[in-house]
Image: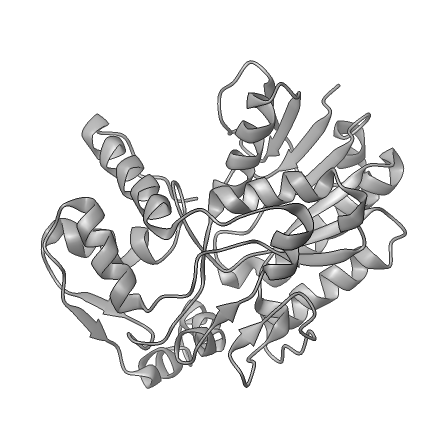
Length: 315
């Protein structure tokens, strides 16, 4: 019987599992394939987490359930996320466990000021933002102890984002990187290790239950500045960045579903995008990891992986 049950072994689930195990807690991590980090206190289970009965069974005796699963593609959200949410809520209710949800900023939608704090109204108009809003409202209405930790785009070891997808390939090949966003708009990035730390802290503090909180994150930077810092950390010359015209993804989205889904969220990259987490930091004494430290964590991990000849993580 595990004290903590984690759904998903991507960069957040893995970080949460390691954090808990390293402090001596027993962990069960559930994925379809049975993957997850290796540790004596981590039990890896292959199961369908969208099955309420199976989730309830596997969560028996757990103090906290961490929902860290996220489909690999936007095109799968509407099909996969609602059943997962229903199952983890059922498991938390049946086992009287705290449900800690990994959230994002999507539910807020575009903000005229470009700034979001823990009390910004959820005013999303896009499909994915409205879905995130509905799922959080579902958890709140379930009569369970729950919380949601919201972060921005992830950086750090195993993060599947702007560096691993766009900047690292360009740095390795010495070519330009095509960017679908304004190169000089400030944007908040969240260290995935800080998301894990925030989830664990909030799950164990009753002051956090019943509302959403923001993950303390470094000050917003532009994509141009982020790319410069990644190049320094990787010991490579700066790369040329080419800003792709905004209409390209929108036009392609007429026939390519993933392009359509990405275009729906592009407001985050063509205007200032600041996440304020001051209330979370002040209430729980949490601080953000320095941006350059997070960057070195990611660059170093990928460099070591390539040196070992192993496959790159897609989490």
